[in-house]
Length: 308
Image (tube, rainbow, N blue to C red; front, side, top):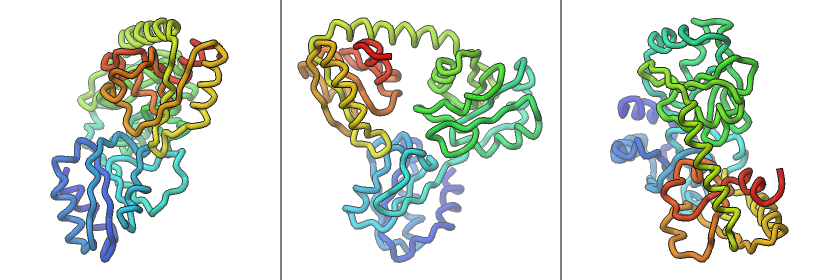
């Protein structure tokens, strides 16, 4: 891994520049090697952001500019469709992980019908080869916020919205598969890099039960906090205002809260019975059990308080 990173850095022109760097959690073990590689390229100075980073929706270009950086290098992701302008130039360095294409093709041959095949950014370069091997059995679409064909994001499983019989997502986690199943309504499998097919249906059932429980509790709320995140690609202040107005019309008190990261400890002891998070939908879904009060997505809030 680090050898590939260092090889990639050798192709980036940073001589004489002040460089800011963002890395995902999985690359923090290589932080020193990345910084050293940039210094070898004669970077004037290097700043490394150590905040958690889960996607290109969370660019630190504004913060980098304040540090005097000339460029921001964002490792691990490609460009996020909602971000079209940045305060300083951004260089995206997606990380490609190894994938045994033979195992993937063997597993896909066992799936009946036409397959909507997609994956996360780490395995995108392999899709063309898989499509070439399996021909018309594979259909590759494009999402709304993802910038590459076949790419799924935590907020955008739209690459599965094609004419197919079944969805297959090459990834390690379950979350993308649950969203794709919910959006398309058809059978969905996770295909692990090791070649194991996992039906997401049992996980969908668990998700539905959790979300219904959250909505039921939220209906009893007397005061709700609508949360805006300041993350560049997730900041929907206008949406938050609309949601707040809908909740007020339903006779419930509501306040608009602002944060960068929305962690349970940030709202511990606050006087709200429920929250609506207007940023990444993974927060209310993945972190559901960490919060003591119900946290809804925007769509769920509209359902609870009066709009489709």
